[in-house]
Image 1 (cartoon, rainbow, N blue to C red):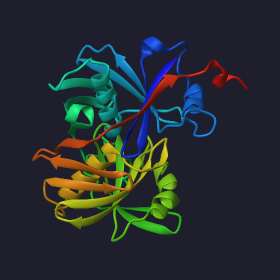
Image 2 (image 1 turned 180 degrees about the horizontal axis):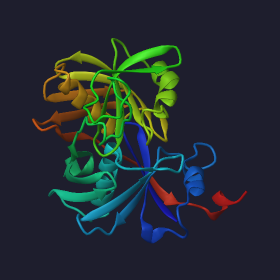
Image 3 (image 1 turned 90 degrees about the vertical axis):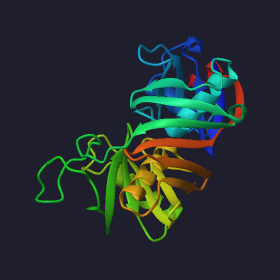
Image 4 (image 1 turned 30 degrees about the horizontal axis):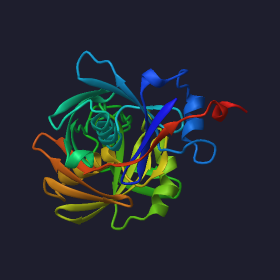
Length: 286
């Protein structure tokens, strides 16, 4: 069973073509394949290309815990590079259907850089979704901007957003990996987020630069994330802290985000091919 491994700023995925599958990708098999010691090791699996009625290709995205993600910016760049490497696309724009909506990709620099039109960010509670309310505890529809959330011994001010998948963005004066690892897993499953959430701790460096540390839903601490970069940049712009062109700095590297007037997001970042090979059947034996 063939696999193709890529990373986008240290966020690594395995691409698997459904035509190569010898058995269904059950959650248990996904966990085994993605395990850093007992499998190949990855931050998830990209299953595609699949047939689509609304786009040129369809893609399903699986987290290393076996759950399915609606959208992944880094995953979409990687999948786009895979399509380029297999000779399925050219440098012209092409569409990809995800559970979190349609995106448009453009290959640059012979596949080493990919630009993705990620879609439109929403801050509305029913879109994300976020329950509760800052004013009286009622489940009222509102834009989730600068609300309070308490975890363990801390109370944070947060904004919530979706770009096809949920995000909790927490602006801070300083961010470090330790804070994401300490509070990220608690915030991911906080009762305010019925579908769980991705978490970004964000420092605004200047009008065109932010720095984030990421706890990714279903994957844990992550070196880089395209959808997290999109959500955090949109929040920084929404709060008036940044202009529309924003470089997002992460431990794995940088992504350029363009926030349009309607909060439609364009993301540009690098992709690196790591390896290709075949899974052994022995991997799945006890």
